[in-house]
Length: 110
Image (cartoon, rainbow, N blue to C red; front, side):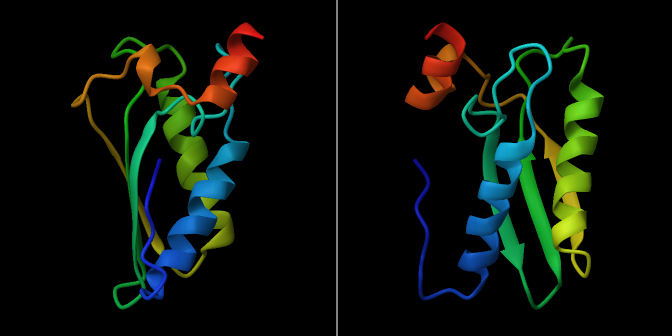
């Protein structure tokens, strides 16, 4: 679960970014990248007009990895056109099934 500081004006941008990224579906697993636990952090900086997303993929050899990363950038740039979006790929911590939310597990396994 992610925590938000409601006294920080950037929080509202971050919250909206989290929600928007629910529209990005992993084409192999058919679950959105938020419920899969692929997105680790989203930070907004309104002074710099910047959004930074730190995320991973299900594996380094993920055949749709580039499409997912581009989808994240496109999704956020469409909504926050006046912000620079920086999508950073990390392999630490390693993604695993423990990252999947309860909602994601329901979508995967019923």
